[in-house]
Length: 471
Image (cartoon, rainbow, N blue to C red; front, side, top):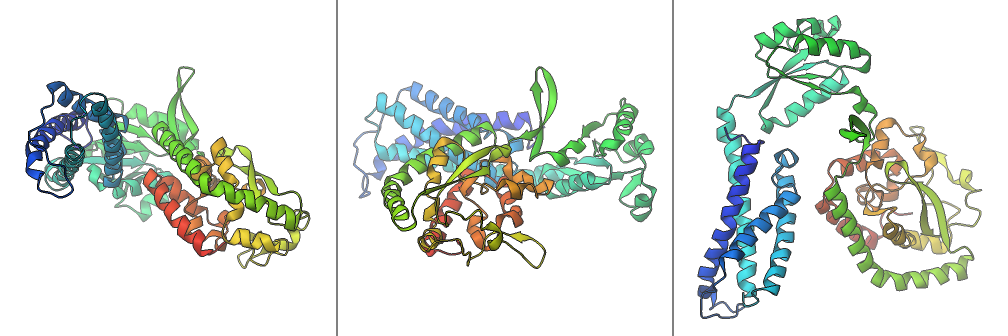
């Protein structure tokens, strides 16, 4: 059976793409002379003849790049936005690669022919995947038997698993209920909690359960072992959610450590490909931005020295990705003894939260207010980015003394590289103290994509130009 997230569908996708690429190339070559009347296309008189090897190389190259960018990994492309983002990025890389091949082999291929081929092949691959999604959502999933899922443990972890199952209905997983040893819970929710763990065999059989998810707390370790043993001879898949996930930095993944499978509680939120892409984006954009901003920094530096004296730069220890400390660089915008006057600037809000930034901070110099208003004091952090301590986009590096007051869930913001700008900055900046609004940073961590980085960079530009919310 061809299921949406299966090896069979991945193989089917590869064969579809392998067919589409040469077909579209041949089709575009055939119709190319018909486009001669268009004003922006150079006329050609004959149909371009490419050797068979080019059709083969283009197909294999494009599909291989798709594989590298996980286009065929259904589990990583559950959301249509994720799949089409991977498809777009892979197609761009494939187009550049194919253009390079033509440059060194068959330069007589017209640019219009190549561009039309790339765009049309990309659109056809988008269209057939959209049709496949529609088919699986409306037809195949209506015919396929849903996987019936039972959760052992109706605590916080179990309830979170329930919400995930309900959130991803397109996976054809049907949540049927819980098992739990708490008699009070069973009394309050008899329609949702079917029985105790000792009744697992009977409930699994009576409700035709396909998957049992064990979401028990650490103190129930022995109970987990007995439950797995009880179901050993039954045709049900057993999954375990370790309670360690609640103390993971962002996510816990199984990795081989010295040949032994272990849980990595500080697994990064970005995989290697995302990290490579993000780092490349950081370097390219930062180097381009330094062209206009380096001369500006060479003006700001002497101004700070002339008006406010030495030192020009301000170095401060900040916490970066995975809790690593680094020297955070800014142009100095406060008095030299600002740290000694720190207590004078701090105050407590109505909810009892410590606020360490305010628009009328007496420590900020007149030049400093101007630099802060337009975020010019942040320009030296481009060198933090080049060094690799920061990224262009990400949660803002935090002061260690504020991190000490964080709740465990807030520390998840350190699962990605810390940034010069980020989701928090474009939704409030100084008007929303970041140590009180880490949910903005967690949104970025959980929804990261290179497109989100680009969106944040563009919005940051407009916000900085308005000088809104910074002090």
